[in-house]
Image (tube, rainbow, N blue to C red):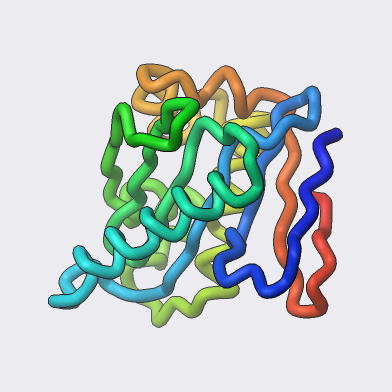
Length: 166
């Protein structure tokens, strides 16, 4: 198990960290219940990516993937050892989460519920609890993320500052 020392003040912290079966962090996830049609969203994504890259440099640990989730898109980035983006895929949020909530596109979605759907999808990719081939299975395999998710664990940052294992 890797231990990360979060030294205050840590300005950025991921909403979810996902470890592989050997408990090495392989994915960090940032979740925002906003729509990507927002004029400032592209700038917000660039700011979040810069924060993630700084975060990775600060903790001095290679985490190979990051995911940005909003109500319209799921963007997944693969990083080099020096925190540069080497590949990126973009998925439609509705295409993924409608498999876990058939009324997803008709509801008002808040951060907590969006996080729940992200965790459901990641668990499905890891343990196939809902489907033998979860949504975006092939796309994640192409960038090398899928095999790392197999048998992994989800950690979330709670409001108390404590990490919780799922």
